[in-house]
Amino acid sequence: MVNNMKLEDISNELFLCIWDQLSMADAIYSFSNLNTRIDRMLLKFCGLYNKLDLRYCSLSIFRYFSHQIIMKDEWRLNLTVLKIGNSYRCSIQFNTDLEENQTSKHLSQKLETLWFGMDRLLLSFDKNQILSSVFIQALRCPSSQGKTLVLSQKRGIMSENIVKQIQLTHFNMLVLVDSIDTNINYNLQELTCWFQLLPNIICLEICLTEFKYWLTNDTNNLYLCSVLQRLERLHVDCSSLINKQMNEEIYHLFLSYIIDKDRFPQLKCLRLRSCKNIASSWENIDQWISFILTHINEHQLTCVRFDFIEQEKKTTEMNIYNQIMRIVQLSSIIDIHQFVHDNHIALWIERRYKYFSLTK
Image (cartoon, rainbow, N blue to C red; front, side):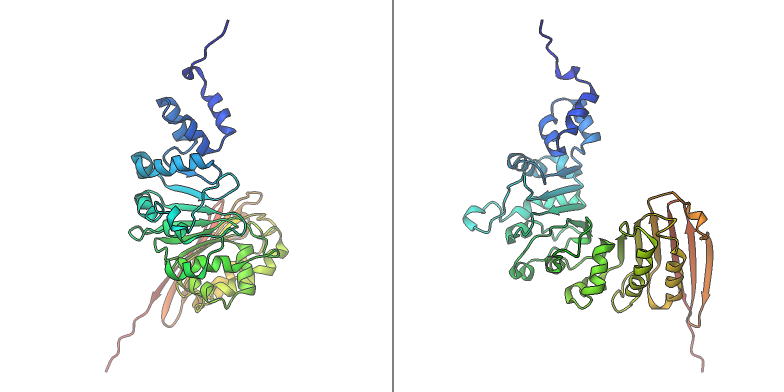
């Protein structure tokens, strides 16, 4: 006797086991619009209509979603994260041959409606992949603002003509994900091209390893200096600091670089993320705080925050406490509010300037 199992008979747990073996794009492509229960599960567990990662899907699925996210209201109005790129399973190409790309000319216009709901775009490329002007043009959306661009380790190669002709003005935050081994073929030129395309970046998120390479090797790079001068917020992933010696080696160099008003004239917020090994690596956190306060007239910071990811030692055991400090100067009064929580320490700096009236 053969049992005919219906789709409605499959348990939620079995669906999750199946989807666990698929990419999210494959799961959504194969199981969406079958029935209401499955769509609800896809919404909850696979980011249906909200997040879409097309980096590892087949060309046919890529084309399917390229149409869906433009034409279907649920995607257009709710998509917040889109990840695209040419990895080993996705052979989609943006060629520069005009005859083959008549439909690609206006691709940026077709994608424009997506930007109103989407706030983050992640790009991932193959090693030494050449980026065409058609692809970069497709990322433009002048009518939208305040978006985040996320670049992985491999950032592609583009010609000088592209960076001279195209500006991606709708991105104001740049995230450089993944730790990079700067000892092996680190190529700042790839990133410099992106700097030239992104004139409105005011927030940068970067790992400490790459940032350290900048401040020791490329301090005079004009395009890098231009980006740093516009920054209002800097987030640094400090997970690479795994012992006290590494911390001691970097802290003075790093902070001396940060407090330079000429280099960072707009910087207001410094956030050190993923700090770990509190008991060892960050035993000297009081030196970081003391340095920032001692040089308070040399920077414009209003917020400094240390985020910890491990709790083997409470922050309250580090001789750092909630307190309010005041520095009175001839021309200003500076109040520093220090807050200590279980997983972070924050300094809020408030400057009030005195005004003197001229009397006859």
